[in-house]
Length: 347
Image (cartoon, rainbow, N blue to C red; front, top):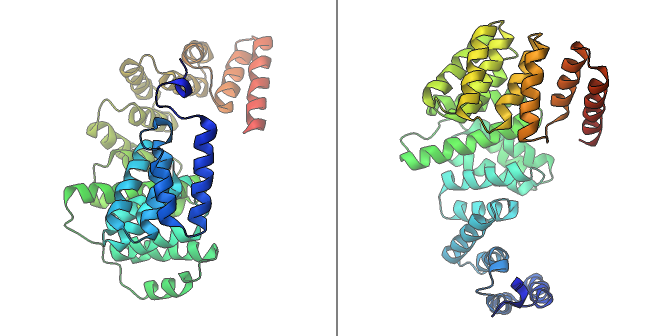
């Protein structure tokens, strides 16, 4: 029996018609009527997230903050990839004078879609209220660049404020704030702004010296500039959680870059021991072995990674091709290199 034929299930065409009608009513300002209409889909599992989100929009516009907060929270629990849901929640949390939670919500929205000026503005305002006036100024500038009408004035006022980060937060709020800052740092790093990313990572570690993901990301980032600092950070990450494989892999990469092959091999071996059924440790070890001019060993781990998961990036297949070429397997090397080229072109 299909879901649409199950007892009590509604036909997809009916559900689609209800949503289209509800959205039209919301756009026309007929909020109460749209809410009543959406309630007719209560109990329909396939619509739970969308109904909660739209009813949250309605409640927010009606000024029913408590209901809106609850509905957006429900929607995001069901679909954490709803960028607008995170941003709507952030705006409500600012109204509720909860800047830490607001910063986390806006950071989540921006991680999914950094194109909205109002979301940058909301994130900046949350940071400003938390005393991060320097970081807030940058986000206000990003909002201004995206056409936000109030961003220029806000940036000017923020620039005159002294940066005095809030202290003595409750442990849960401190963790939430550090995660929000980490999210923003990784977003900036992915956007090609390593300088600002590094500055934010360092701010996180001042507040939370054992923040595992920050130790790993900053350690990897420092690899290009300061191998000793990279090693220090990544060794701290391993101390925080000896079973966290990404930390060991990042440390191994730094050790390879530092010419300490024996120690690097030990870290790769430990990572494989911790996650023997994961392709990632084998893939990372294989590419490192190729750099270390050990193509025969590398090919073994390339094959193990492929047996677990053949969906690897272009860099992986390019390195495999080089290893095969070094072993004289030219036909197989050509296949791997052509696949690498196709992946690179598609990305």
